[in-house]
Image (cartoon, rainbow, N blue to C red):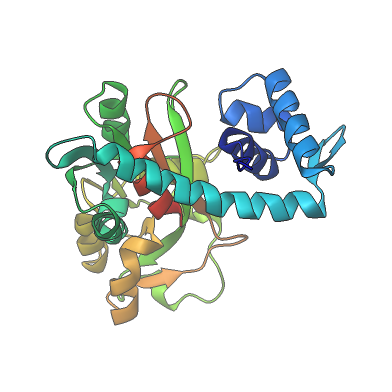
Length: 296
């Protein structure tokens, strides 16, 4: 008697529905019509012999069985992507080249570990890496120069596929001699907006995240505009003014006391770190493997 293999497309849809909160949103994330998605979920429920979703006017909530199946599906889909990557790579006679771009924060603090794990899993894959700002990465992905990009900007253009792989925390930092280093209490966004800051160039994800943080407030002219996180850190430590940078890019300096963190009023601001590519939302091969590693 033959095995009834699971429908991976249906399982991927179930995971998307659980993550997005409704059949419609899950279908959109996969580029599928909602009617087709509903039929696929219904067939999966028939196979399981039990309802997997509780449908309501505000969305779809997974049943206990739905949660259990979705978690098992995540593991199965991850292994399937790995298998497809190995299978696809095996079709070539030589190394597989993957053109990847990354914004500075990702490239400096996260990507080296991701690429090391990719090489461990798929040693035949060779990555050509370009370190750019977020706007440049997106542009090169749109034009097909890069197959995959990792960006920090919260603003993505229509027509590009994307998946949030991690969240990043933003921090206000000053040098040890700055007056804010001895302040008591947290800093308000209005005061931050009125203060000349050391900032990254326009087009960088860090600059766009700062502008989103201060949206609706009249901001002072920057104290300096620099083109790398390292330059911003040096300027702040030298007394040029405060800055708002990724916590990932500040760990060494905060640990050594070269820079000091100033707490903000309210919730700590976060921004998404996002993988972007052209084509269908569903990935396969080494690209899928690298995105899965980044999100794991």
